[in-house]
Structures are given as structure tokens and as C-alpha cells.
Image 1 (spheres, rainbow, N blue to C red):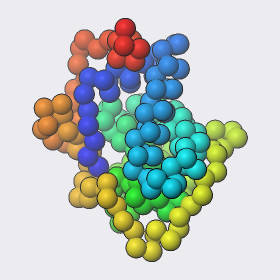
Image 2 (tube, rainbow, N blue to C red):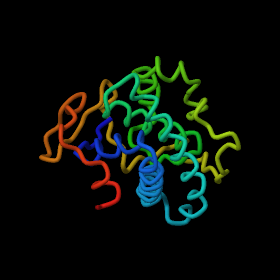
Image 3 (tube, one colour):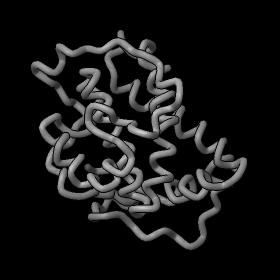
Length: 190
């Protein structure tokens, strides 16, 4: 998968594991991801998916923090995007997917150790990260799976994480964390 990475990503990484600031960061990240992916959804389905996405993305924050024990920041973050794409696929929300449906297994296989350790499968994208009450239901569009359209998917990046830097360069595996990262500045704007 191809993702972006800049100092803000590293700031939020630090913030998610900090007391107090972690809750603020989690809320901002959930809202941001829900908004980004709802923009990719058909306008008729957006509001019906909002609560589900809020719950789902809140759970992936725990997956991200756990993945940092296995991988560097870019790969840990990519795991959460892979989980989201599994969920989108399961609901038939192919228009929201970031990679084509035929790359599901390849993305799973790259992170199989982490996914297996935490009970994550394509059919159960949250595994042990699912909240005790589950996530809100949302209507599926299974007919989309018959002839999937992926207007936002970028295929051919299933063998590793590809990171687009702030300069527009694409590097494999991600960047090193900058030394002077102020999580509070990036999370709260102060």
C-alpha cells in the first residue's frame, strides 16, 4: 500500500501513548479517518456508515499501538489501513478501498504474524481489538463485490509499505523518526 508519512504522523504516534494527550489524539484521528473515508463513499450512504466507522477506527487505534511493538511507524499505521480495507470489503464498500480486492490476501500475508497473534482475519478485521460491545452496524452493499469499482485504490503496492514523503518522494518501508517531535504542538495546535 502507498501511504503518506510526515512529522505529524510521528507526533500522533507519540501522543497516542501519552497520558491525557492520548485521548485527544485518539479523538482527532478517529474523526479525521471517518471524514476522509466518508468522502470516498457514495453520498447516499455516508451518514449510515458514520457511527460504524467511528467505532471501527477507535478500535484500530489500539491495533496501531500494539503494532508498534512489531513494526516501525509506517507499517504499524498501514496495518490499521489494511484492517479498514478488510472491513470495507466485508461490507461491499469497494468504492472506499485503498487497494483492489484481489490484493486482500497479499496484504494479510505481509502482516500475518501480527494478525494471527491478535485474532485478526479478513472476515474479522478487528480480532481482539473489537470493543466489548462491538461496533455499530451499517448497511452493506454486497452487490458491489460482483463488479467492484475502486476509484481510490492503488494496486501494485502489496509487497511492502510505500511511503510518500512530504517532498513527494516514494520510499519503501518508511522514514526514520525525527528527533525533535512535539506531539502537543501537532495534536492540540499549541
